[in-house]
Amino acid sequence: MNLATLTFSYLRARALHTALHVALLALGIGTVTLLLLATTQFDQRMRRDAEGIDLVVGAKGSPMQIILSAIYHLDVPTGNIAYTQAQAIAAHRAVKKTIPLALGDSYQGFRIVGTVHDYVAHYAAKVGAGRLWEKPLEAVLGAEVAARTGYAVGAKFAGAHGLGDGGDAHEGAEYVVTGVLATSGTVLDRLVLTSVESVWAVHAQHQGMHDIADAAARMKDEEKEFTALLVQYASPLAAAILPRYINNNSDMQAASPASETARLFSIIGVGVDVLRGFALVLVFSAGLSVFIALYGALNERRYDLAIMRTLGATPGRLMMLMLAEGIMLAGAGGVLGLALGHGFAEAVGLALRSAKQGEMSGLIWLPEEFLLLAMALAVGAIAALLPAWRAYRTDIARTLARG
Amino acid sequence: MFAVNKLHHSYGGLSVLDIDAWQAAQGEHWLVLGPSGSGKTTLLHALAGILRPASGHVQLAGQDLAQLAPGQLDRFRGRNIGIVLQRLHLLPSLTVAQNLALAQYLAGLPQDPFRVREVLASLDLTDKAGVFPHALSHGQAQRAAIARAVVNKPRVLLADEPTSNLDDVRCAQALDLLIDQAQACGATLVIATHDQRIKARVLHQFELGAAA
Image (cartoon, rainbow over all chains, first blue to last red; front, side, top):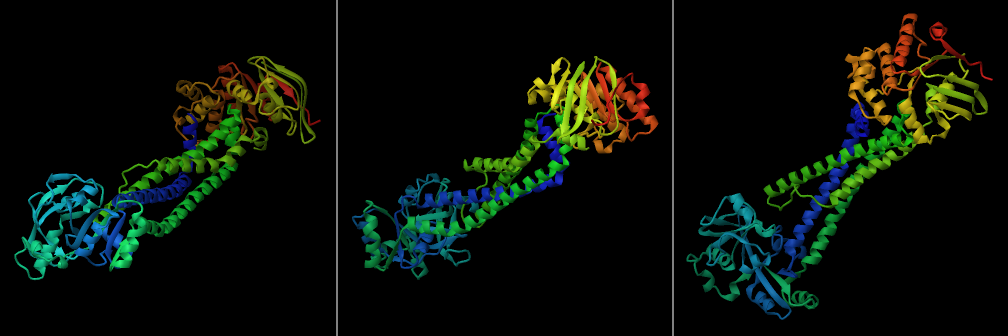
């Protein structure tokens, strides 16, 4: 017999009420946990994928669409930009580094991105097996693409026209896998990388050219196109001049990842705030129901409390008993809630992975979760405070004299 | 064992207890007699330190109860005084054995399952150890309440109207149990009652008049 077993005996005696309190609190804490896990990981991924990219240049259109298509590979591009204009930007003195991207094809829903080796280096991705592409029609698979397709070095596949599933396959223009990237936790995991020349060659063939091995070499510069250009500034000053220079003096559109992702977060943030508010209402009502239950139980238990006093319990001990009951309920609700939140997050993560929409895991622990647990315990303790005080003040002689 | 001196208590200006002097030696058995409202329960509460009298002194086991701080008084009560109330008040969420263990725990004494079994056996409750109070008959519940009162081997065993609402046979049985258990731990037994049937069974009697 101790405080915990005594408290537990009361909780067990009212098992249905106990289950209700624990469930209410667990749902509230679970929702907050899920939101915390989702927003933290979303935020992390968004930041990591956009890190070091100061500007994205694409065809005229929505800046948000340019960012979503060129950095996160979630949306379709706004169009293509001319090779010669892209070269002019690369040569601009405000620009430190550019990475070209040529999109258009996919394989089993994974995008085939024509780019340069710098793109891999930018995300500090390591080659897990084989080597990077060198010649046209050599491709390197992102870790997740390799895992999903089961392809290893040496495998051959034909890309499909378009960025979604179900486009026409480019017959006769098969890629050969020369390497597989190690998991980097970035957008690269979900991409098939090749040279820009490969993408040009495959599309030249699509337009009736047959000998595509040196197609790119035979193309005129005026015929070449990129989809987007990732730009790193030479100095902070460039932010003031380059976007305006591009938007005013060309038919291209400059989009800033920082301001577009901030805009995206503020749009999503409203929804997250509403959900979080709803979850906190759940937590609050759980606290209220614990309070009402304990306060109501006081009357029912006044003889129990008096008897415990006659058996030697101090008023402080009775106070502890009530507090322990609130805290034990809250602890159970909090722990169950965290488990629920992680379970949901992992389930959503599995769904996202199967939809190739990105990564989320329920199997990580964030330091903020200790705060959530502390919040749950505080709710329990606060709910039990007034009942505990009433228990402390019980006049045993009067209570016993009455019955 | 205990001595009461010029004890006085009142509720809201109404005097409920007025005793000049009364003392009892270790192991003696006493009846506190008097009509309803004569202060029997108040006297028992004062003896147990449940109630602090308005004036006067209670000396128990060499200790003036008024000298003890509230927490000390609770601890002292738990270790030295066993109480059987008219309504037995076993804790409904605990089994019979757990109710006894609770008495050991709340008194701050080491928990001794052997002692719990021993007391339950002496009251013929061995097979009820794991049963919850709602499943006990009144007689079994009363034996369990007596067991809980004596599990800490108290110096004084107090019983408030233990035989009211019992028929003659059960009345005699309940009295036997109290006397046996008080003897078994050498406790001074005090029974507050207005039940005339048990007068003949107990040697020492202390009569309270109607409220002054």
